[in-house]
Image (cartoon, chains in turn brown, orange):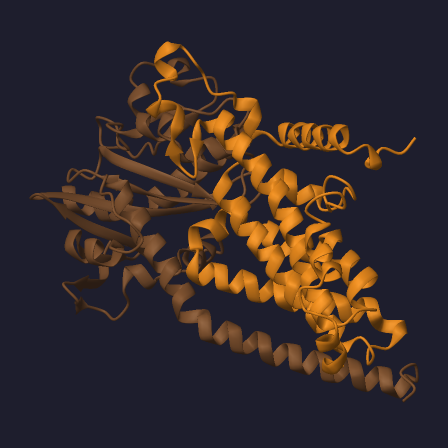
Length: 249
Length: 217
């Protein structure tokens, strides 16, 4: 057969592409559940890690169910619209765990209505409120979880992760040297005004002494990533202010 | 075709040579200087280097056999496209399997699994060997080259992880033997890509000084 005729080439290419497509889609479909489970486990691990609860990918689901007692969705007016508690819905139909934060923040940026997820964590009788974060770094997305003490003001712990920040510079946001200073900082000042947390270039020492409780040091050489974390904290935490204020009334 | 294979023993000297040559004097990285990019990128730790080596070995072995089986049907004018489609398909399968069964490693390797597609070793073997050889020798050649590539990756990663992080496969060697107590400090430079190049250079140097045939004037 003439393997160089045009019709042969067309038929050969078409058949090859169809076979390859079939093989690849079969692989993707077969492995999808397992892959989604991995992503889910990692998300649970990150939520727990912000409240200093260690777990492995294997036991993340049981640990999550043990410590995360409630999942809330809060609207812009500060009302809880969905509440998932002990495996069933008290209110609404959407789990905070399944909410796509990216879509909600996009809706926020367009001025449309959006929801904010919140996880209630109970460890040894103490309650922590965990807020997921999502923002932009230098090369791609940065995200994380921040755990607040039951006063909705003091930071219990925080974890960050990133898609592809520069190793040794921006990528340092995941390490304790950057995240530990967050512990004990507050997001409201004495008058009860929301201040967010500031990632300060040049160090917290540059701030006025009454502002230092709201700031942490930025990373040298990782300014754009640090500023990304700064805007991410503001952008995500401010959504909970109406709810927190409604509690204090 | 299968009769001819049986005539020649499957592990004849010629076939064994296909397997061992790329490990030694025809090594894809140190002699042919191919696949350097990934050798620099994934060798900061031993575990991703091993997974990467196995992935490349799989793609090379399977790809060589597929190309060899198809070699008489592939139209000359689109042969590079056919080769690329087969490499790409195999790489996507590897990537999907890693995401499902070795999620943490797949995150460390990130784009480099996908970039196996552009690894010159694979295209090179398809074009130079399996397009003109039978499936069994092609398989041996693929595995041989995969081993040669993997061996260098593992050696480089071993030294980089040991001196850069003081660990081997995450096991803290230097801490256990108490090297830190006498004032030893990990060399952070080992983790950065330039040191991978230097380690590869040292391997090439050692190999050439032991094997004068490789030195061209």
